Image (cartoon, rainbow, N blue to C red; front, side):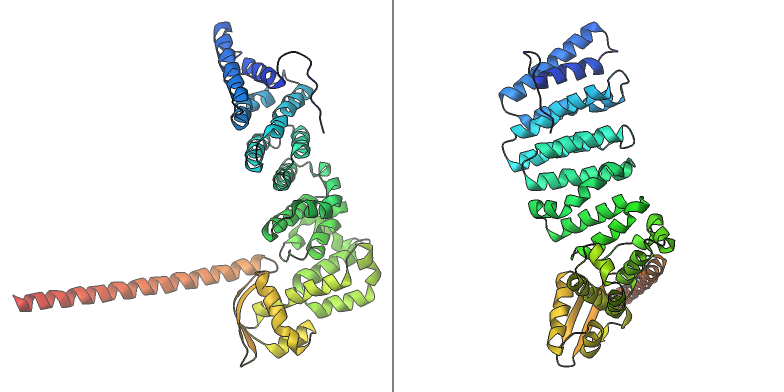
Length: 383
């Protein structure tokens, strides 16, 4: 974490305001520059006296774009300027204010990811280390990932993925946030062949991630023909497109491989049972017999409803259980992958819905015409 060491009597924040405002108004003439610099410095001082740190953050970020684009400002000076700005989060009086300040800073930093991306990442890493609130840290980490992906500098963030498990404990995230994190990590890894195998681990290792399109990623596709990683690709394909029996057959022949990637056999079975249930839901015309679930998931009779409830809780399927007839009635389910076939199916459904809606509208209009005609006839009879 960067430490600010004052080198003059003026507050570092005021020094930054003075420097950036002079830079912003440098083409306007000496008198205008002096007037504007004085105005902005007075405004900054008022914010500091009144403890309006969020307003001060916003004020200091006003000239951020100009500072980044000015060739006269070195990367070292840029980093110093944003170190002072980022340090303002330590003055926040509540977690909400800290988050708002972090959002303002992140919004400025990620605006042009292809311009000095490595420097922008360093600024965000510094901001992350200054934050106290766990969710704020998660928010900045996600922005850092997105910046690294957009700026094509993922090599700077990949080493941090080794700490994901400890991050999860620290951040205490909701399921939706965990899913967004794992998908972002997989996206950050996809362009690197040496790391493509790691993106697969996030699908298999984390229990709340069930859908992704890793097979469509070029770096992952290369693994199929790579002697070193061919088995990893085969296992990935099983998790994304096949059922529990395929996994068990693979595990029996390659148990050492799973252990080498830190995958726990019992966790993999649990995930494959849920994925197999989703696969059944998408292929059994909306009706899945209890007996079929028992056979495919390799469970006892009294465990069938338990696994259906697990799938419901994970929002993988939307269904009802008909205990009398021993069937699960599925109304919708999550697609394990979403490729050309799924898009075609969605297009067919949309055309069907559109046709049904047009039919309903035509029926309503026809009934309205008939009703209007009847009322007109009744009116004539009354006259």
